[in-house]
Image (cartoon, rainbow, N blue to C red):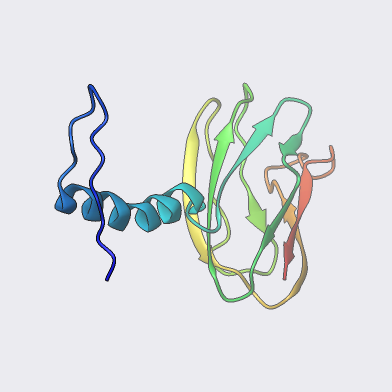
Length: 132
């Protein structure tokens, strides 16, 4: 029969068994929290001077909710719309304003994103939604 002997180090207080158990139990939780990703589908798209979206290309997963914030950094109004996707449009966002929308990603494929305000698409304000 083997016995375990407690070794006391000078200047170190012994730790109770319950403190060690609580500490060990918290390790997996800490690993989960440290590795967890931000909310799926949440992203910010900037409307910038020069009639462009940044980023111009975003990705999503089919059938999953997508949350997009249009951050209008320009001195004129813009909007953001995914053509052919219900609910995927911000409406007009004033200069320096923001608007957040949530919609369900459609079937797999590539969809065109546009600013629908007169002349903006023609000036190059477009992008893509890639759904996997």
